Length: 212
Image (cartoon, rainbow, N blue to C red; front, top):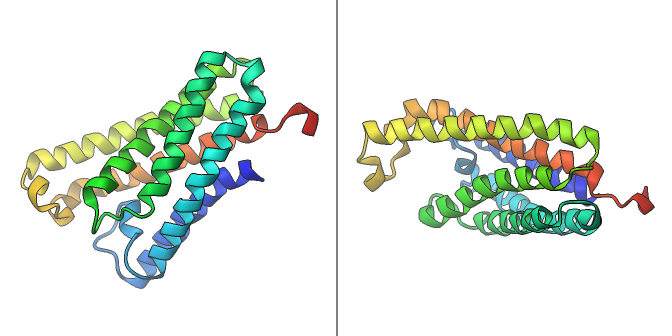
């Protein structure tokens, strides 16, 4: 159940908060970043509660994945995997309260930590689990590849926007770089999807053989 919650809860949180933000008409422009759905109203409750609980669940998933597989994996990499997962979960829970409208710097910091270390978590787990389930391995090949492509695309698009409008760093007015957000925002959703698929790949490896 924890494994299923680990990937389904972030998925539902993103889908429902983004859809509600769109339907309510509160969106600044379309497409918008995932975190723009953390807007005052019902969508904020969904965003905050969903990611708070997701972060806690992911910390448990990280520990459970380590506890079940530590004796049959490359122990060094598995320890690093667990630490990465704990860090992702903790930052996701903090990010749930650090909305981009009132706490932009802390929001960006925690969001980047989630992006960077979720990729690291997937890579480290994949390396550590030399005898992991074939289904999980195949899914990770695709999800991690998608993650790196999406992250590079999002970062590159934002970099071009800031280069064209350096005043954005002082004003934080997303409207000035919306033409580049038109590319960066979908990439962010794909990056989130890649993380969710990576979490889905852990599902078959989080259950102890004695429990199957």
